[in-house]
Length: 558
Ligand SMILES: *[C@@H]1O[C@H](CO)[C@@H](O)[C@H](O)[C@H]1NC(C)=O
Image (cartoon, rainbow, N blue to C red; front, side):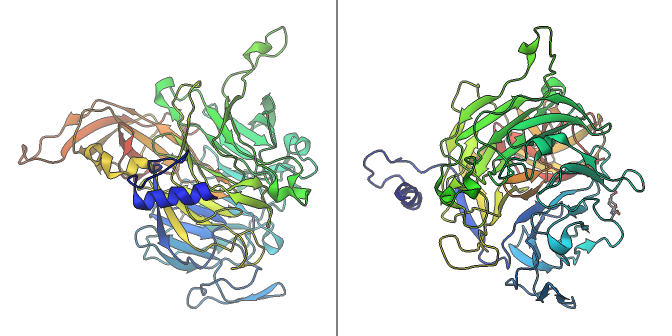
């Protein structure tokens, strides 16, 4: 704790302050900003829409929040509750203000994802929300779009703690697993009356304290789903229901809820034709910690595992050498309930969570206040981790982190209590922050590119033009496309990042050329080849020069 306080002091006073001993004498990279003191709710589930707003979603059935329902909306009055407050809000990234939204049933520990047309689908929850399917078609910040709960369609199996993944058709998602449910199903159904399908991996990984909730699910370029639970993983051909590959068990601790680690699909790149994919899984908790009275004190996992998941296994006849192997790396801090955010650069930010304990109410201690940057493209033998500037606000159970189009990270939530509780070591957290990675430092503004023209939508495999301005032009120009995931319980469902093929920039003739300042350039960009690589949806298109991103524009992959 004293080290953390020290870092904060240094940040404020600068490096000139005399520092003795082993403490850092330069500020750690990155900076924090408080955006809003009271969002009305602690966001348990967060997603950023293509209207530059963020959906914050908590749950019902836990008493009043600090924000009233939208005008004219009816109170929730039923045998389970009598509540006239909102348990979901829309946060405007531009003005840092919130507008209440209306959820009808309990969304606790639910799952979700955007459809191709930008509509959010949110599935399941607890109690009266167990089988519910809700949608929200986003609107501009000034609009009044809200949740709509389907009265016709429901989930086959009641689900909480499950994971959604948008499928290549763009109009359908798969919903995988959850508490005590060892199946997957589709939303919407592929044909009338379709049920749920068994998934043996979920049965086999359901140990004494479960450790397989919120399985990590990634859609791979080969069209299969990588599914990871506890310490084991498979490739599922969801079209046939066949498991086509089984991967080695990851070394170390269990990685899924309640021993919540996190996972990302590392960036897919045009450089190899988007053919190879690797998964990174970081953190987790000590087996047994959830049921151990001292579990909140037990050290969390300190390792990440990286696995190339598109390597084909050829078993038998002495050919087991080709089995892909987990590359294990050691983080500078232990972390459970940490979020992993794909940065515009393709690096991964580890943020939020605790250094001891597990997910659950009051089951963690020693918050992990320092984010850490994982440098994806460094040589495997290098130390890929860089410690960044700490927050002063613990974000433990039920907190979230999402990439914004301006390159900052939106950080919200944290609630280690069943009911909103504003006392104790970890009070329910209503404050909203932004973390700025060092690439946003003014120091890099001299080369920061900005997009001045781009199409609203793009087509698979087709070329399109993007115009950008850049104060100085000598480094390679890149365009990266990032999805907007549904983030909850330390895992961002549907998160992916694509590195696009871009031609050499060509200067654009400008009237009054010769004036100092930014110059304009145009590039020809090749869209991703197919919907397995980039399922149709809205993406943030980030311009980049030498590791410095400009603001993203939203682009729809159709
Ligand atoms: C968006 O797509 C979903 C899935 O195809 C569909 O159910 C919904 O009606 C669409 N919404 C709009 C506003 O078109």
